[in-house]
Image 1 (cartoon, protein in one colour):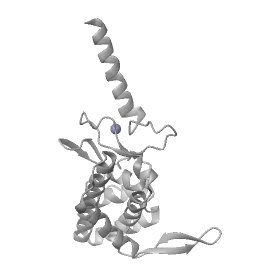
Image 2 (cartoon, rainbow, N blue to C red; image 1 turned 90 degrees about the vertical axis):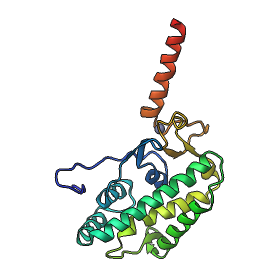
Image 3 (tube, rainbow, N blue to C red; image 1 turned 60 degrees about the vertical axis):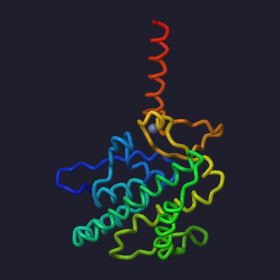
Image 4 (spheres, rainbow, N blue to C red; image 1 turned 180 degrees about the horizontal axis):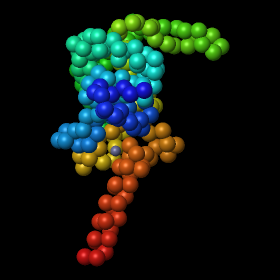
Length: 216
Ligand SMILES: [Zn+2]
């Protein structure tokens, strides 16, 4: 299924390395977040694409929401802007925790507002054994993709141990990467959002500096 907004446009593959849905959502901006951000979300169709890849919504729901968005483009644009505002609030809040700073009032208020909207649609479903949490199916609720994100943020914020393990990528200080993740290593020593990308980049740089120092 092609979820891209424009014909011929290919779907972006999101890297889901945060360990929590809310952090993967916050990580939809790459690059130098402050000075040269590369935003991977450009429109409502892109938001649905992320939601589907990250597991916030299912295939069928994504298709229904995309059709709804095409019928109501102005509402879809509003839902997209709301999503971006929530994403920025989540990023600020969890970055603050990663840096042992106070997250401030505004960010938590934004999370609470999103949580309130989400919880109105939280439902108990018959699942394996007995019951499981699910979400109400509301035809036309364009913000449904944000409900599991808000719930994920709330769960992480009250988690205690996991909240204390929220980290920002080791390349944050140099301004190259601002991705957030929960450090789930036993030794609590994960430094990079991705060893393959940022970890290797840092390693190559250390190696270069060593070689240069030895040659000087
Ligand atoms: Zn990184």
